[in-house]
Length: 356
Image 1: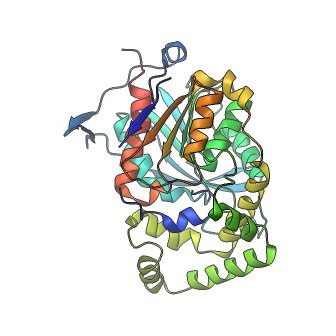
Image 2: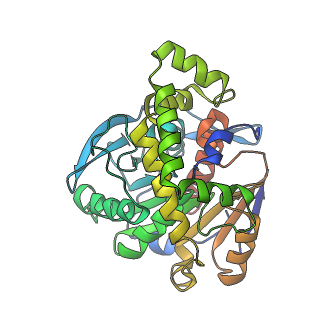
Image 3: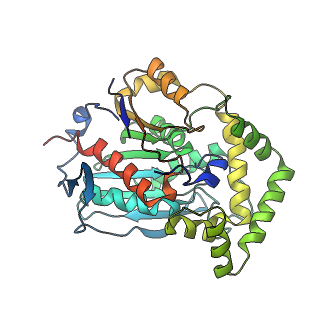
């Protein structure tokens, strides 16, 4: 039902694709949007078949810290003056939220400034080591985000829509399962829902992340590079892992990724992902929630492979699925063009099904 194929360079984000998880169709939304959502102003226009963002609603994402259950999170937020919906975005792994700044700001504009957006990073994948070297598992990251919603987003008068990338899609589904009275819809972008046994890359990453010695050595080497003076560090990053990255992604790598505590947590979380996702997804829940789920896949993505797309189609044919074929990679957040494209996809999922 509602399968669509959508047609930039595959070089974007190759380094992040080697890290753990850095990581639609025509479903009728009206039955659950009618009672909760106001109208959105259509604040974009179509040029050459593409939706282009108007500048009048330009608003930058604001950074803030948030303490939940004694742990410090980094957030990016864009608040609407009169929100009809609150979008909560959950990143992949690495879960450094500043990678997604371009995507979040584009999404806000495309929705006409009528939606508030909050993006929450993963605990201890932060600029500063707030947690003193503690390592956090996938389940601990899930539990922390549930507590965040209960603490920071308790208003049931404003519906909550979840958007997740990669392992963030899995986390979003778990939040949806436990917050069904509050969440109205869940969108998974390049979803990492199950270990891909056909992927040699995942096999190697799993063994690497599962070795405390290798993880520690790699994290120490990463921190050694990250300790370079900022100008030298930026030069090294741009000449190696970020040759085709956006300025936003390059800055995020320099400020957050190349830290010992961050890399150790990225790898530890990956190890627990490989254990947790060794079994098939919860098809029973996905069938129950099929009218409120959408997934976007891309070509040549071992984290969200096409055989998973086919399996979802077989197990839960009612779920809204799409495949983009324009060459954007799994780590779309490393490219401004890809960030805008994915933001258009998410915005269209929402706007095209709102009641007039």
